[in-house]
Amino acid sequence: MALKIAFFDSHSYDETSFAATNADYGFDIQYYKEHLSLKTVPLAKGADVVCIFVNAECNAQVIDKLVEYGVKLIALRCAGFNNVDLKAAKGRIDVVHVPAYSPYAVAEYAVALMLSLNRKIYRAVNRTREGNFRLKGLLGFDMNGRTVGLIGMGKIAKVLIKILHGFGMRIMAYDLYPDHEFAKQYGVEVVDLNTLYANADIISLHCPLTPETKHIINAESIAKMKKGVMIINTGRGQLINTEDLIEGLRTHHIGSAGLDVYEEEKEYFYEDRSDNMIKDDVLARLLSAPNVVLTSHQAFFTEEALHNIATTTLNSVRELAEGKPYSHQVQG
Image 1: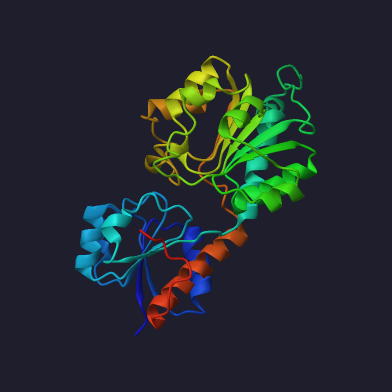
Image 2: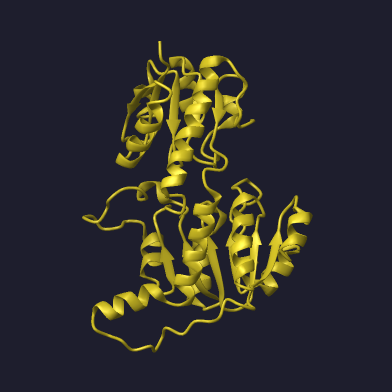
């Protein structure tokens, strides 16, 4: 009998991608639009696997229920797993993720945010649609010769480094365990955070969300940055203290910000809220800022990435079915 998968936070594109890929696996997938939470966890009754995304609430209480229902595997169809209580899961239920669905998708999107902010493309499009073809307020700078600082030097950051190296940028990177050979190949200066803050014209975040990196961008770190710095975040929303970011924008210490993630995004991202007032005052302030580009956690969203997510996730379920070690297990 095919294993049953309770698929939470489902959208049409998820169902299309997983249905096509599942033709090679034959699992019984039940799709639910709801996020996994203590309120919705009863939907997992009778399932062998729960498949969740970034907005799931997989705390100790939810895990207790999953264990009670006999669920054997939590399959995250994303790289991050900060929303899963790994201590509560350890020894009771396995957890897997998709560590690298498409580093190209995210790296290319980070560049798109940089260029959009630098050349004011979003403002120019709005102007010309209204018949305003003036250039005042649209001045940018050459990326060539500018300094970019990457916090984290994993797979996504390495793809980004290759792209920015082609632009002729000076590249700095901070990482706890840097790949010095790669850095040498692409002329990357491996530096400490203070050096990166002091020199970078653009700072892009590519580190995982951990207790140590939560709010790594805050009032203290912003004060160390060059005036007018551009900040790019395609990682996790909680890497940035949003109130401190807004204050930095208000004082013009931060010149611009490109954000594909937000600290409290789960109430809004991936949903159509266009008919309702935004009750989150912090989010509303970000959206009103003329020098902020904020998108709905879409950096990963390419055809190739969706295919890789489905394949990697269903491979993990197959490993469960066949009793094999997991290729992408998250250790508690």
